[in-house]
Length: 476
Ligand SMILES: [Zn+2]
Image 1 (cartoon, rainbow, N blue to C red):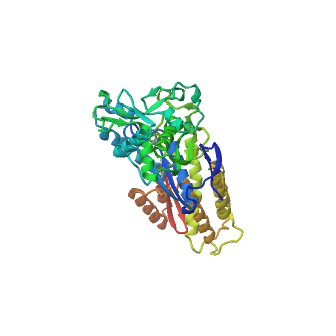
Image 2: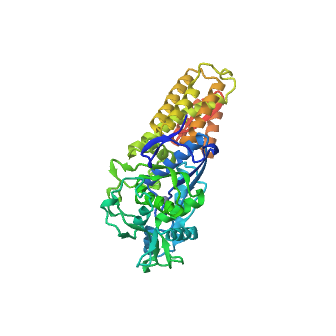
Image 3: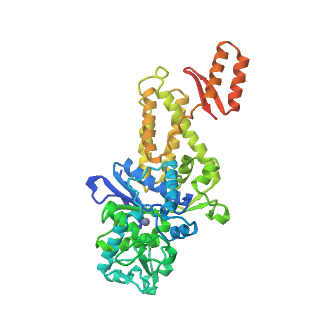
């Protein structure tokens, strides 16, 4: 089934095809973190969404080249470096490491390339030189180099591809030096910012004078270097549509004369407990904050993946509790299937022809994903499969082959969802010793002692079960 995705450029859901459909290769660029602080769950919604897109493409048979930049020089970073009296690399390094650790904890596949802006200064300068040579960028009296929206439009190019901008009403000739600005103040934006005393040691030499790049040009230079002048897919949070992505398009098209990206995807934002996240409201969470409250990365991932990417999502702590119990249902089913598939002699060896759950599961799941990543329908197929499989397990009507088929289907589905089955908790030596003592007590028919040990294990958070294959320890 053809994969359909919403394209912000055309404002419609359309079939996704790479630039070279025969190659089955997709170049995908996702704007990465600005490493000046720990990423919050609003940021994480975008990165988990990017991971879902990548995994869906891989599930659909594409080979994805996933590029995510690290913005390690930009207005906010320089301000923090100054405030913290540290160096750029020392400051950004700690948050880059934390970001990559969190990305892993959330079960996201690591991007194939993670270019840092500060390691692409020559490419950035070369791109600005091209823009100057083509007449769409100019050096202003403040020593900085700006992108000229008028000159760009004068070449027949459209500024305002991702959202409608009322350019006729704007005052031309104005300039904006900061990286972030509102669309009401559309103006020529900075490509190269001339060195000022507040920049401290953060500057590089260039043909335009000492200075540093603007944020927008960093992404154009790094994406073009990694994926070529025109590539398949660019994604990010909807807050980046303007000005960041619009400026990326203008800079890239302005420099190369070629279309920049075929398909743009934007993830919607997130509320926390029904409100815009803010530190003053006490509803501002990083992944670390949630983990300190006892949640796991996979629970947060699950919750972030329950909403459609184009819908505003209300993240709640109750929702996290729900995520834990939903994952528990999946874990229990998968763990029983593993037992059933690996226990010869306990079930008929041949597959029962009427057990169609795995095939239906895979078909429903992939149909849901193909429909612009209809994640609610995808999860519905998961829980229908859990329900059906549990029924079969309860009535012992599942053969070893059935169980193996069901597990194989789950593994394929989980290659997209990435929530995995919870690894069996490692049993500490003290608990194992108690369990062995209980087995010995039972053997000696000392049931009082064996019951006492069972209670002691429970008090320590472990349940012991007797199965035909021996004892089993489960963490409560
Ligand atoms: Zn970017």
